[in-house]
Structure formats: C-alpha cells, structure tokens
Length: 442
Figure (cartoon, rainbow, N blue to C red):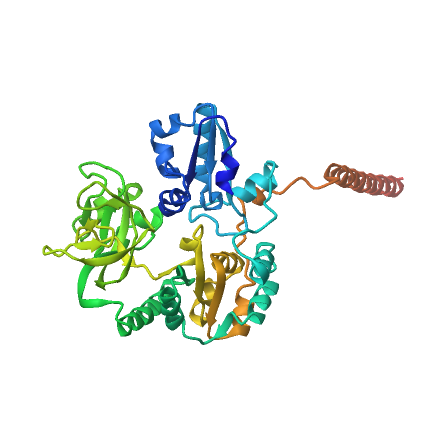
C-alpha cells in the first residue's frame, strides 16, 4: 500500500519509522532500500537533505513520542518539506510521552485519509480484525472463538513446530516477558525433541534492558550492581562504552542519566538452530554488517574463538550481549510485523498487561490465522476491554464554560443587591436608635 502511494510522487522523499526493525527491517524488505529510523533522520544532516523541498513519510507514526514529533516538524520546516504520517491510532502508543496521532487529529484538526479495506487477512479473519480496529474487541473475540481459534489450554509449542514444518512463517506474541520466557522454554524443549536444535548448548553473557526513565537513571541507588551503556558520548566516555556500576562510580554515572541506558546482567543458552533476536543496534565482527534492534537470525554454529555464526554467514562477538531468544515478542515489539500465522500466549499472568490496543495489534499480525492460548476465556474476554487512553496535557486545561460571563454578571448583581439591602438595614436601624435617643432626652 505504501509503495503504491509513493510511486506517483515526483518530489524528493524519504521514508522513516520509529524503530530499527520497522525501518531497516520491515520497510527495506518491502522494497524501500533507503528506509531509516526517525532517530537517525533527526540527527543526520545528510539524510535530512534528501527530503529538501520534498516529502517526509513516517510509518508507524503512533509509536513516535511527542518530543521526536516536534523535532521532526521543526526539521521539515527548515528544509521546506511536507510530512505524511502513516499509522493507526488504535494500535500501541509510543513508550515516550505523548499520543501524537490523537493530538493532531482531535486537537489540531489535521485532515485524515483512512484506508477502509483490510488487505492482509481474508474471510472471517478479516472481519474479526476489522471489528478490533473499530474498538469492538468483544465482537472480534467472539468471532475468533467461533472459528475455534481461542483455546483454553492448548499446545502452543506443538503448534509452533507444526507451523514451521509446514513452511509457514510464524510469530509468537505475549503481553508480558514472564509468560514469553515460559513459552520460549516450552518451544525450545519441543525443538530439541524434534532434533531441530543440534549439538551442545553454549552459554553467553547477556544484557537485559531495564528501560529506566531518565529520572530513575539519575538516582544512583538504581544503578549500583548493574551495567551502564553509553548511548551517546559524554565526558571521557564514547557511545557504546560499557561500565560496571559500583559504589565508587554510581554517583558520577547518575549525573550522565541522559547519556546512558541501564542493564542487568543475564545469561543465554544457545544451540545450533536457535532463533536469536538482536535487542540493540550494533555491527557484526567484520564491521561491515549492521545489526538492527529487533531483527532475528538463526544460529548456524560457533567459531573456535566462541563467537556466534548466523546462517547468513555473519559472525557476532561472544561479548555482544544485546541478545535474546527470538521465538516470542511482546505485542508492542510485534507492531509492524507480518507473518503467515500468529500464536498469542495470553494466560492469567498476562491479563494485567492486556487491553484493546494489545489485542488488536496481536491478532492482526497474521495473514492466515491468529490463535489465542489462554487459561481462562471468560477472564481474558474481560481483560481485553481495558482501554489505554492517555490524557493529553491540553485536556487538563478546562475550556471556558458556556455563558460563564452571564452567570458572573448575575452573581455580581446579586451580591451588590444583597450589599445594598444590608446597608439599608443598617441605616434604618441607626435612624431608629437616633429617634429613640431624641425621644428619651426630650
């Protein structure tokens, strides 16, 4: 759809997305070889110049925070470019503050063109996704249940293996990392039984992102015992530097809150055949190949030095660290992905992270089928009714009430009349007292 839209554009244009996987992954696979992240565009003058006097297209715009969107508008103004935002306001919002699409549509009144026809799915599956896109998640749930795609219990690991045996692309989605870890363990156990994971497992040190806010990173107590990774150069540290945080340096690092990300140490067991997901941008050992956050690869083996070799021939350092199993992702990370079949793990332990946006995004990733695995259908039905509506700052400012001036005038007039009556009463009582006093003296 996006490619057809841009074919007739006769001005310079660039296409961006908020995440590395959505831009350098999904968009590039769809034929946009020069697709870039919003973050790089905002920092790179050369990339910005490609859109001068032209068009900036931002895909998955609902994932962009208010701060980045404001900077994008400023850049567009400086290079005399127009901005085209593509996205769905009923899907996940940005991790950063702001609900940009709602703000621009409802408050700024920007014109909106809607795609009324869903092309990814067909038949009753399409109808279910359409209902979810309209906020009618109850009806969507019931339709999927009638198709037999909502399972209380079920063997998600077995269904995953069966799908890949049939040559299907498959994605497992879970609202929480805790449930995702359990499903990952079940899938790996089944793959071992099937002989799809081979050889002896090797264990690697990893870094698990904590996603601390800037305020939390500025508290030194939150850093000790963890690893700080510089995302931009600061002082004597360069971008990419890793520092083990202890009592001696935690105060200094907390002063660099804007320049660091904080991680816990973890371990990761890998075997040949494992699916591996990149959790931070980087490069392979040769320095020639970019590793995009969110991209998945299959482990093909290990070098004599203990480094990890992918099935495309790339080799990454055993100390890279930013790795996770690639079998299960959260619904937020799945946004923008398309596969043949999506399997959704959503038991009771994930109900608190469930909601309308999560349900809509999760079920709409597949082209052929979306299967939901839960421990309690009725409770899940209730959990997905939750709406992740964010209150905008502008909503905290009350609009002037209708007729408030007239009401104030009436109130002031009443107070004046009341004051006059009180004053008249005082004067009247004063005159009566003077008459009584004159009468007594006479």
